[in-house]
Length: 334
Image 1 (spheres, rainbow, N blue to C red):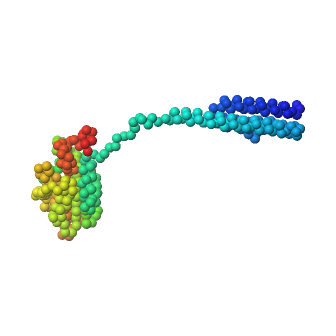
Image 2 (image 1 turned 90 degrees about the vertical axis):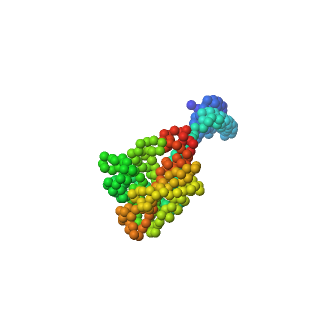
Image 3 (image 1 turned 60 degrees about the horizontal axis):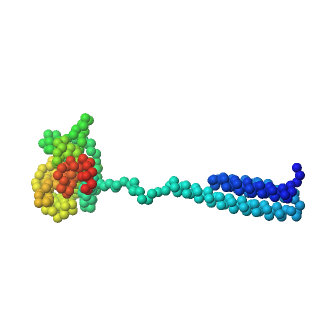
């Protein structure tokens, strides 16, 4: 085969341009267009292959081929750039259609919840006592007879045990009937001064009715230090009650608990009636001795309240069972 002529190279450049433009028009992705650029305009592409024949032309004819090759190269580059822009625009439009958000549609977010009314009341109670310098502590709900009764001055045949009908487990343990068990555990592990508030669930074999539940919530306080008196107890509880209910009248009535002496029930006047809200008293010396405290050196006071009772008074609810039915019509009011 002889050396290429000017006419041969010119025809080859025309064919290359025609074929390249046709291939560019048919391309539908940026990747295909990039491959066409390499195939036609790359260092080893078809244009470079054609231009290799320029060296065999007479020197006078080479500029003509170079000028024609530059024109072909420019037209192919322009066509590639234009087609890349078209393909990218088509792809972007398809993506926008596939990912379009209808901003007029309602959201799928969840309605925010809130604390149960009993938890709300528990938090109010704890906030007051924490503000008075008490430390929140908790303990187990499954207890032994020692912590639930014996250490709290309940003798084995003490009639006060009948006041707290108990759920006993097969292994001899029991479900605690009050949170006073935590007081004993805490005092065993800490030396005075002590100032704690104890929230938690308790269990008693009560027949369920409008004012009784087999499971309910208590909060108890305990303070032990040299020189504490009933006056300190009274001032603490009046401050607590009035922090919750405002400047309501408060009265103390003599009562009995095995673990306090003297003991009292505390009432508040609410909506024209006297309502019992908690029990309290000075810690019995026998309880202090049971945990290794010297009753000649330390005195203490304790008080306990039912969270359900407080919530029923505060919200004027007539039936304790409403707290446990999960009726959203009731719960949404709080």
